[in-house]
Amino acid sequence: MGGNSPCASCKLLRRRCTKDCIFAPYFPPDDPHKFAIVHKVFGASNVSKMLQELPVHQRADAVSSLVYEANARVRDPVYGCVGAISFLQNQVSQLQMQLAVAEAEILCIQMQQEPMMPTPQIDPDDKSFLLQNNLPHQYLNFTSSSNNVIHDSLKRESIFGHDMVS
Ligand SMILES: [Zn+2]
Image (cartoon, rainbow, N blue to C red; front, side):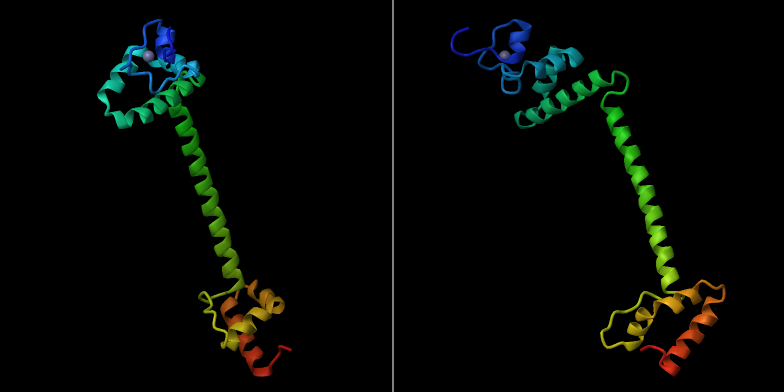
């Protein structure tokens, strides 16, 4: 073997690694497993054909994809990396569902705190906003009754009329 050791592919295939070996840039001799697994799953000649069909700048990405897919296929012989993809898609839809439930709960809580009110405009000069937000206890008890609208407006009238806030 002279000065240059053959690439991992040529070593495994027991052939001479030429200067223009298509595997050499992607399968260095210090990582023999990388080629071994790709060879086991796809076959060396298929990998060689795939690489030859690609422009040089895409070959490294293709090799890392092949290595990933081969490892997944060995781990999960039935589904390969599709198994990982559908597991993750499942997780995404479960999390989206949880998110939707959490958003619905937030909306519910906001509506209980601000019955029949649109989202308050935060204006530092708006005293009515401060009053509503500093008056939680009685106010909240009222909101749990079924006649929210009437009680709410009565309550606000009494607050403003008789200055119940200290
Ligand atoms: Zn080689």
